[in-house]
Image (cartoon, rainbow, N blue to C red; front, side, top):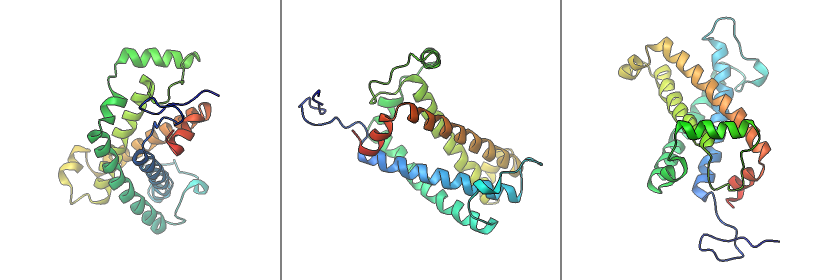
Length: 208
């Protein structure tokens, strides 16, 4: 069995890849997003954005519109405050620049080609490839758009400037739905990648 090394190079200790604050905020964000998606689907069915398109009730959450709204708002506050904590900690610890930068279109295309041909390695879980960097950055921006468009839908009168930037109340609902669809797509791909590299799941649980 090969010896594992800590950050200082001493043997006998597994190297910490994901700090405890990151793991906690990651799983809290995951819970909040899943609850918001499932309850949001129930809210959507009460007043569909796209006529004729409904979400199957069996995969929604809340049971009825009032219950779905309660779940949605509860998860919204969790996502909002935990998301701020996540962004602040990434900035002050330097993790954001260290993990996500630099990033170039050429690097993304190259790593995407390697991934599609099965030649993209995952030996070092402490480093993100260019495709992962882009995916995580898109997810972060998308979650911000979800929160902002949600504010317009919830408190349209109180946020007139934000409402106008979204193109009005009805456009904000479309933006909110499309942002939701994008984050669902991210989750599907993310779970598929974790299934292919299960060590990454253990890392996000144990940190090592």
